[in-house]
Length: 65
Image 1 (tube, helix red, strand yellow):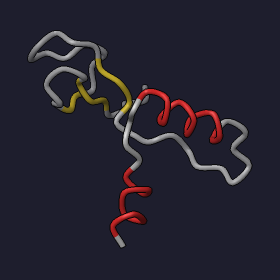
Image 2: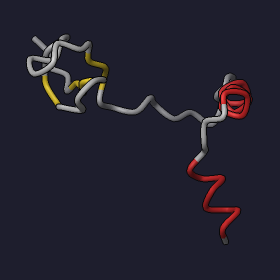
Image 3: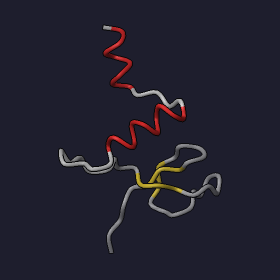
Image 4: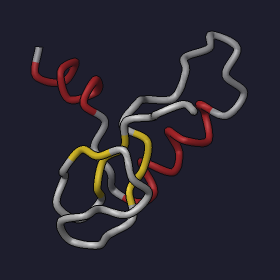
């Protein structure tokens, strides 16, 4: 059996379960997605971030410098 570390969406607690034992919220994988230089969808993720007003941490660092 393979155990994957998961993070609660509600309280931020780390667990191995699908549902947080503390607050009952669903959990998601705690690991970031794999990086690929051939990412076909990066352009669309950036456009969605701009559309929905989400801030890109890397872009913030470039503007300040």
